[in-house]
Length: 286
Image (tube, rainbow, N blue to C red):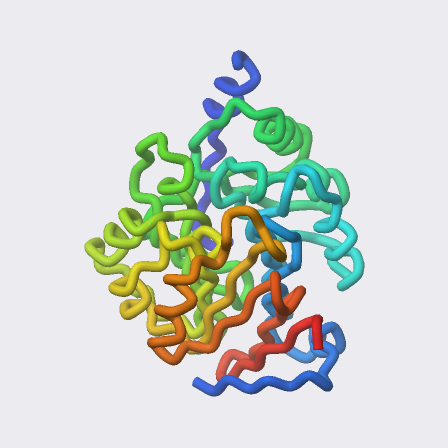
């Protein structure tokens, strides 16, 4: 990364002490394209949780690490040939987002880990912190307005600016740009945070938007969607989940804006493949 990183230790002390063009081609195997200079965004089917892999010719970035009560992230990463991870982003401390972070750190060399700076009393969070401490990874807490380059991938941090103690609202939110194609990830940030992102004047337009909070109506406000102007929306949620994600209001709003919608509950693992100019969408269930 070109921006110099800082190592933060107070979090660990605290925890350990006390606590374009959209094409759909179902005849293409995305894994076969991974060495052809493309970026592949893998929206991994991890049931009612989140895990997204951004894999390009000179970068590997994992955004969130699935649920604490499943074991599917490491096997998936191995199945697509991941050997090294430049950056892991744990958007916020909830167990459906950092649930397998400790296992990923145990299985792969990792250069850097980002977390929001919010702490949690769960054993899942404690295991994640312990795994970071035991690894060789650098730790960092990014803030809105910072920009980083990992190989040919640019990461623009659009949230949070400061923490309030609300774990969802403190979600690390990023705009990842490969060539001319942008993807936006907001974790579980709600509509209050979306309004803050708009008010700060961040560039939010993105070709691909991963719906906030698994497609919840507490996120994904109309003004925010109008600012993002996505060509495709993707949500990560489990089939028949008890939360009702994605919420009907959000699905209807997406439809009214003529945005194609894909979700892991319906399509399984979803791949977005881009050469930096155009992109295609493929998915597991056909």
